[in-house]
Length: 226
Image (cartoon, rainbow, N blue to C red; front, top):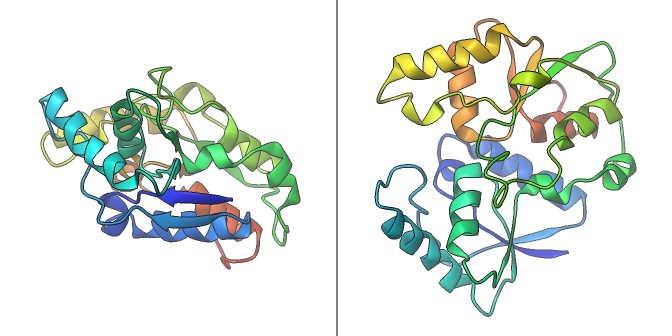
């Protein structure tokens, strides 16, 4: 399948690993990603003016007109903004998580399993709500983990906000929210959001924090370890 691709700012900076992982996993699944030409920042969570935010995000959709109808957007903040900006539903805005399903998980060439390991699949807030922009399968990370033999913990905390966007403004807020999540879960933390990854890495002392793409690449033998 051919898809447009909007990496967004985080995936060209602090979340380069997620960008690389998404590209690798998509290639393994037979998908070709082509970046939207000359894409710009979507505004993420920084703009207080909703109209301005939608205008900034909408610029990326204008740049994709006539080129891409289906656009893969890994960062949950970017995903939500581009989806909201597409008011007339001219595009199909997709999280990479929506390219995964039980059928293609089972078709992955498995070289390593997850048996005997415990994982906490943590989605954060933006992938799960509001319903209009949430991913369709809200258990896809659990499906991936269990398909390859891993055990799951902390399901009641999987959609709690970690306050990741406040890390550099009100660190105490992020610490309080993140610690609530961490104390009610155990095992390796599996995320898909750059904000959540940063917050969990900051406060999850002694616990491993990985992207779901890291886990899938390990299972397929592309990564030597988790």
